Amino acid sequence: MAENTQVDVSRLTFERAIEELETIVKRLEDGKVPLEESVTIYERGEALKRRCEELLRQAEARVDKITIDASGQANGTAPLDVQ
Image (cartoon, rainbow, N blue to C red; front, side, top):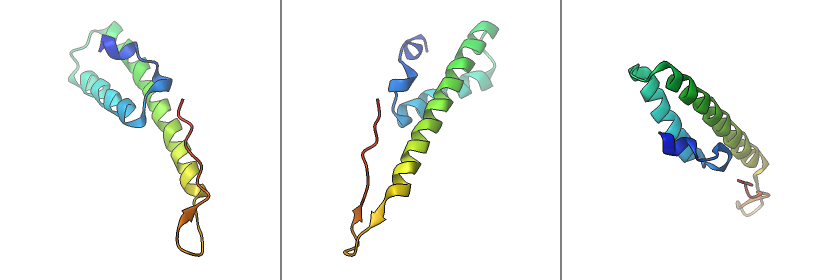
């Protein structure tokens, strides 16, 4: 887990953030993590949750912008700016 905390949350893809969040949830649910580490990984989990929510909002905004032209092709989409 120590390796994961070195990765800047804002650089994670949705899939990687969800994967790490699931790992944190499992560790916390197991109840075998010392208190101080539990607090630290909980904070990391909150940051990961916010990242996932941000990426979902961005994806939803892109989907909302999709329009279909007369030939049935999607147009009007804009690339997702993932930093």
